[in-house]
Image 1 (cartoon, rainbow, N blue to C red):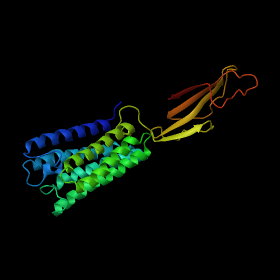
Image 2: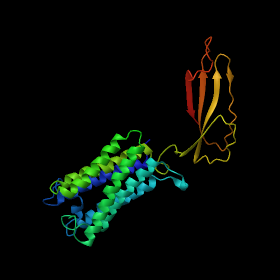
Image 3: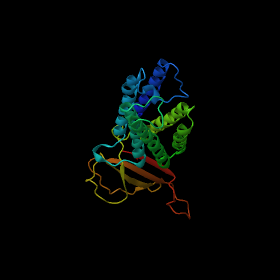
Image 4: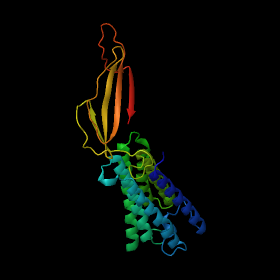
Amino acid sequence: MISLASLLAIATTLYLAAAIWAFARRRPGYRHAEHTLSELGEVGAADGRRVSWGVFLPVGLACLALGWLLGAPNGAEISDFTAASRALSLCLAAGYLVAAAFPCDPGSPLSGSVRQAIHNLGGAVEYAGGTFALFTLAREAATPEPFQIAGALVMAGVVGISFVSRWRGLIQRVAEVALFGGLILATFVTGGADRGSWGVTRRPIVLWAWERPERLTFIDPEKTAVALLAGTVRIEEGAACLQLLVVGNQPSRISRNDFYPTPILGQSPFPRRPAALLANTV
């Protein structure tokens, strides 16, 4: 089931794309390949305030909310992947909130007024921090290639937008697509963590108890799951190895039953791998 974090990331991206397209149509001479997003809200622009407070501000606040959704409640620990997803969202939030509060000078130059310097600093946090977050996601992900490509595109965009003035609008848009695309993909991988998911709550800690005869009634079922061997059955004899592990308070259990076939003469009745495996989660 799609998470609330994923829905918010998709909605924010679509809103930003639609708003940029709409305001670009209202500005004579504006070219997407040549002009940056910031120039739509630059000082002195006819729609400058509308873009700053109607586009950049809500996008920044949405990314800030997304960073909160990707966190775990009650101070629970989160994975490195989820932490990198939050960092990416917060870097985007910083870039757009600074752009809303400190609009760029006309033409969005690399240097200019103090306001322009702060504006550029916000962009640096977004792109440099976003690059680092994407490469961290790639390191932690089971399939790293999409995040590696996105990180490389943003890194190339940071260099290109500083030296290729004619096409910097196109370069920036490619970087933005990589950032928001990576964020959307990350929310699908994490499932929105605890606060942003609809359905089963994810628990960050799994105790691998397996066959130990312990009493685990002290654990918090909201934060901890227990992996245990439910039993071993030899089909020929019908004997079972009973599980002596005691788990109280109804924690999440990941149980496994190993079934072994009838032993062949001269072979061990306990092969290295079971003939059939029944795994279930309670």
